Image (tube, rainbow, N blue to C red; front, side, top):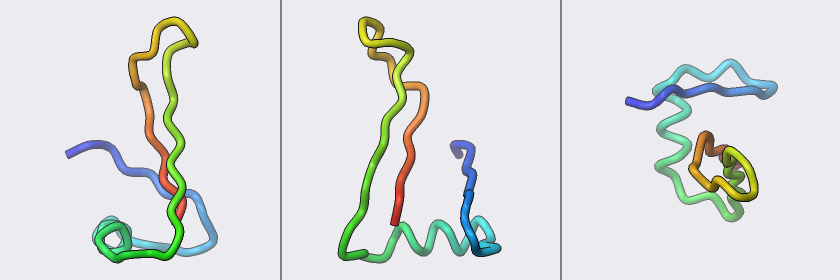
Length: 49
């Protein structure tokens, strides 16, 4: 499984975070991180619920 990190006001367990991702929130945002503008290999993905 991939590494999972949470930064926020709640003290969620990993299982609780995965359960939130399985729900259908009204809005979700996604941020991707790449090496550079030329080298577009993905090195990170962030989700905001």
